[in-house]
Image (cartoon, rainbow, N blue to C red; front, side):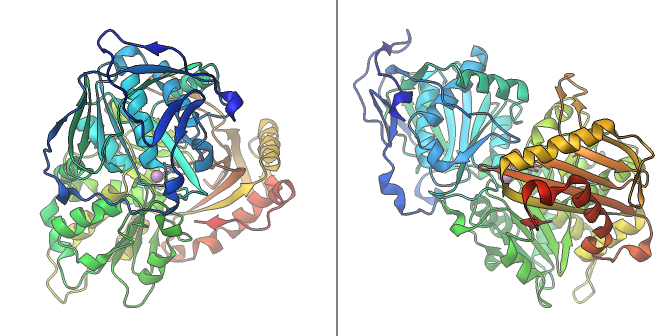
Length: 624
Ligand code: VG1
Ligand code: CO
């Protein structure tokens, strides 16, 4: 790769900086051929739990050097740095190549208006995965090199995605970096990722990410401050000239926000009952740092109700995706006769959630609808009622029915949380969700796993607050079935075919686009009659921006839908997603297993798409 990188030559000195003595740049070093990582000693994976006990909350101000030296490091463009559904995700080995991360970070600064970062405050944190600590040092040095005033970084580099959003908003920062590949596995052989969020805490819009990509193709120089590595283990401020880094406790701002949104006394009342069993599986990911302080220390859950609660750099060899396949440990416990009454899990960066009752799985599409239907009575933040509701296009239409009943504005956006932010900023949207285990509200601008768990606990606590010891409690299943009875049930399932050959997967989507372009309403598809078919396109009602080619959908006259998309978060090959939905108003049919209820539509989806012929796949990797 050395041919990609040119010589280190010029030393730029910004007028407000004067030359300082050279400090070693561990773990990355500047040399004539790029930014090199010293990561060989990292073969032993580390626990990344932040231990705030070692330092005072306010922390000492450590005086660093009086001024900093900025070096210009020549570089050359690297192919393939295009962001997907949620940031840039690649194998960690790709990110560890010289200048790979540095190029993208510099391209980001090249894309932002000067006033968005010069002397500004930016937040930095991540899910604790392998390479985050080294990446933190690279990002801090390039931020300082570009004139950023202050970096707020989570202790040990830890901040969940929702916590980054919360910290940006609370501290009025100009934006923030999230070091995570979210639900993708971590460790030396797996994935790494980076995402940039804007000043209201939302993921950068495509107008910015497209610019960043453009700049990665023409980049020639990286500006790096010659400062030593920052000690991320201790809460406190370190200053170098006009630049400072503040290491913050990853939990406190976020916890404070949760206390504002929810009635903690109400939830505490439920969690401390001896007849209510609770289990939270942090999947050795970032919510491990939040679960004990929030659920145990503040809300009175038993210490053993948190499982896999220590964040690890490789998530304990796990796939930190909270679904029925990858959160199997929790599912097994919840399906025992004597299992807990409520169980939940969250993903790598803490923005996803899976909610289970005893022997009962709540689909994310139902979950957001049920939270919306119950929010006003159970959650203080929504006391005045939600302003509007929204879901991503492939998410089931359950939420639509709640919006209709509550007479609320309703929006259908493409897949990816970045499409909700504008609606929230414009005061049009309070509660939203995606079928992919993402649920959230306008308390921040990211989906929020712990928020969803607290929302469900609030609903259960509200329903059970007058129940005497020994009286039967209203269960998760009761809440869901009551909801189905009132609104009808949207049967929903998603089939994922992970790591297919890209060529076959792309051809399949092209083939489907071709069918869609020739389709006409009224055509028969087996027992279904087509209402319309299209490739979903979205015009943002706030800024008028258009996102096209967001998923091929076949919508039938009875409201059933089959949808096809390629994932934008994978790091290798292509992942095909098929989404299947059918509405059932009759209560007598609500207890059927979703896979049985949806079988005719699933068969139809497989035959219409010729999936087996295009991808060679007999079976999906994951069924939700
Ligand atoms: C997936 C989900 C999408 C979600 C995105 C990021 O994207 O389908 O709903 O917003 O992941 O989630 P895709 O393009 O792979 O289908 V997270 O928790 O990985 O930031
Ligand atoms: Co995530």
